[in-house]
Length: 322
Image (cartoon, rainbow, N blue to C red; front, side):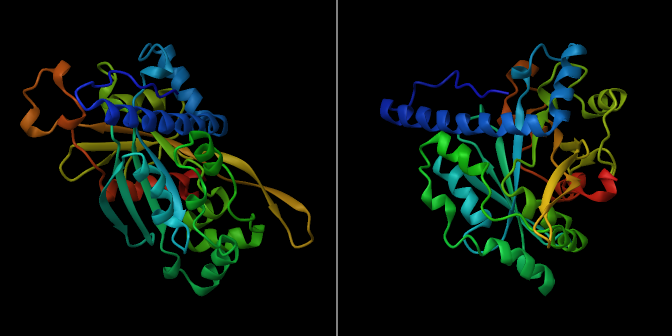
């Protein structure tokens, strides 16, 4: 999936536009890198697109609007939200609402993009201090290898540098026993300690698909009929209290992961990878009389819903992946 700058407005001062255009190009470059690797590791992405093309919902992947992408982080010095968000804030993303997931021991923020041609960003963070001492010790054994904020050492105007950074290990891989210990207490912790900043998911904007596929009920049935396994935590459709944000997701695919053991050799285990999300953002009440061809992003339900996100997190959890 490629991000192309188009329909760029020429109403702003020329220099400001040039700066914004260059920044958007950098973002598009590393988003392409994220999506390329994500599609390689998550076959469901390609399968969803192939099924959509076969059903003539779309004619090619570029017709899919990416509602948002999500990252998982660890809340320790030099890492976490405060570090990763610098990349997006530098390129004009605006930090928006905060979320507290008490049972999962997580914080999160979402970031609105500088142009509707880019996806929203959702970054969550494990409150490591809320874990047991044993689990804290495991996390810090590895994250303490990072002794300064790594984002401060990359050129944020270089898309290639950002792309490389997001796909490089920042700490060594834990052994299998340590990973299993973290999984027992926090499956989020286990996922993040192994996957680092790997893209957790991207999201298909259902509301911008042609009728009748622009309804999440209809699209979910299409996915089920096509053989996809959906996250059923809290129901296959997670709906906000105002009824305007509806989300669903596939269950994370299992991937082969290599862990060192105490003898110095490597063992391979199957662990949760990433998944695909789907979101329907309904038109806000005050804009319901707008003709369909005039409806833009600002006319639809914005932001996220904590209850929805809480259940979407479980797309990588063992009770879903089984």
